[in-house]
Length: 127
Image (cartoon, rainbow, N blue to C red; front, side, top):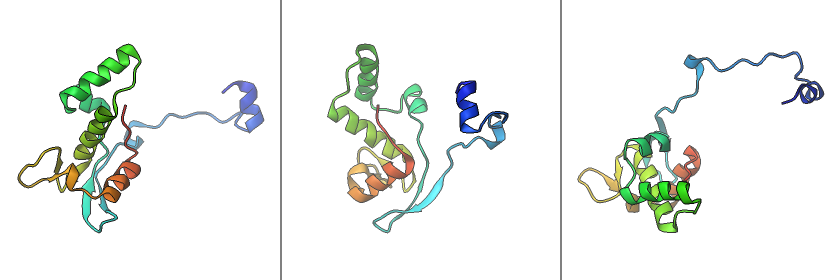
């Protein structure tokens, strides 16, 4: 913001203070009741960390890098798979996986309104 804009908005004279590290709003586990009535513990996933540590499916990772290099949008299927990977990572309990595993729900087991609720609550977006 320019000095003139600050004066016009009444912010002139106020000093800007960055958030202290101990006050920075980091992602934390949250307990929620989903629209279906099921209860879950959720955690906002980090796309940055998921990409950096290989937690996205290989085809999703390749499509993300290709999109960055060529400027093209990933296909609907890749975007859907990326969202499913984010949803799996978001569920701390009960655990959710992309494919059937003992003791886990699959993304397909989740009701649409529960998936939509989690996407909106955590602000999940695909690339």
